[in-house]
Length: 390
Image (tube, rainbow, N blue to C red; front, side):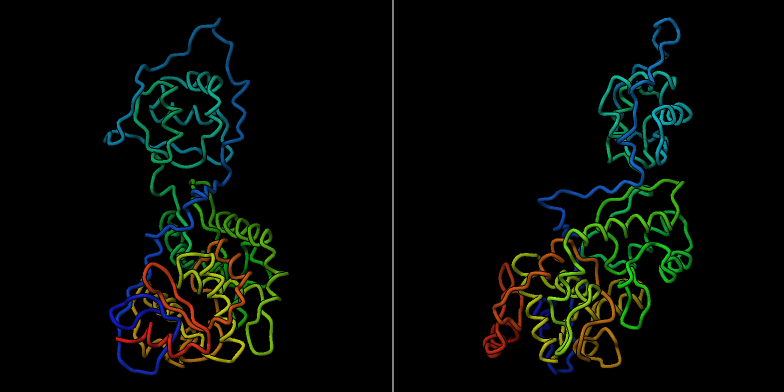
């Protein structure tokens, strides 16, 4: 929940005033917090890292060197760069031919020879690269190892806090796929969603089910293949966390335990509300469960923002009246219970935190100073004075 005076920090509480307030949409794309200590997760569809360049070195020609250019440098801003696509499962010879056909290397054999003597060439991954023409084979290898040379249309970033519908729209645009066709793959579950990945009204949903990471794409990829790989990567992580078995230890209503989908919803709320998975994510998990157990409003504006942004096709701000609108299924200040789906892509760290809530009787929270302050249900007055005054 955000501060109602000028779009400040989250409060995790919805009042009854009708005054509108501006709340800037969360800039998760700028935070990248889940990429910090663990580094960026690179997900490559059919990466070339396992290519066996050994054995490709030709002994033909009586030991003569294959024709090669002498240039060893490529200016990052060179306007004459050409596109070279490394296909999924490409062999060293296939990469060599692609480079030769694009005018990068003087001969395919020169690249094959250089790759056979350079173990780092095994780390070349799929994607479309922008490379200078007329390079030595060794320089060409170095250029293909630079992810900065990947064409923007060959890269897709999925970050914690993103909306899945934003990711799907970006993916369709990059590959010129029909968005309705992409959505149909989800609606009919042709992408490997687990049986529980459904909205409250029983529809298949990919929200929260696309694993964060950096994905490389080629012209040979299909929408079904890309989405299936994203979902599989997420399911693998959820299995490691023991999501399905641990979900039943959490409470999502006065009389019912949580489903795996509801745990993802809880994690997505925490992703929108706090910046640290531990302990803040654990504490949000406890506070939300306590509200659900009491049959109280969850009361966070991130849920309304998600729904109205989806309708508008862009991120929007929300008013207090919208947050408490009982006709909006995502307005958790207007009706009780969780929203129908997750409202962002939660990180695996946040999911793990939600599965291990604190036990300090927290019920309210708000951002204060550099962090988030939590309050017990008996501390409502202190909460209001700290978080709602002024």
